[in-house]
Image (cartoon, rainbow, N blue to C red; front, side, top):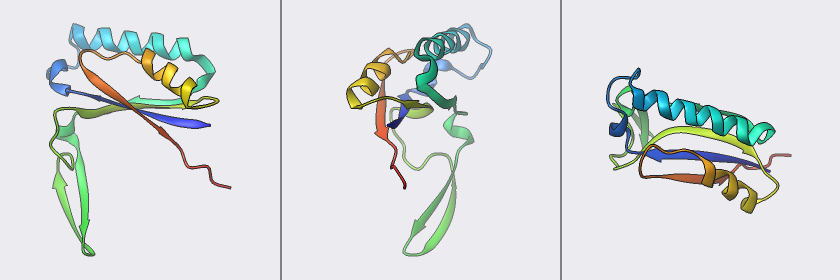
Length: 115
């Protein structure tokens, strides 16, 4: 079964400099994580900061465009991995290894299986 691992962290811990030692260290840790889980990794990517987001909101059939994320939260979606795991327990075991710089959460979401 395939699962999406959604990485939520406070993006301010990385600062504005994408070449900082903090960013370099977390990238190194993600590269090691990708190697560790091997073939279970089907895809994934980091995301640009929420300041680069655009949201299309539909309410009662009307659509509006907003700069930034849909909701203001303490943690922002910073990236994701698509993995293949035999069951939820295996997906949880992989998610527990996923590196975070500081506090954060990993949401594990199974993909719909379409026939």
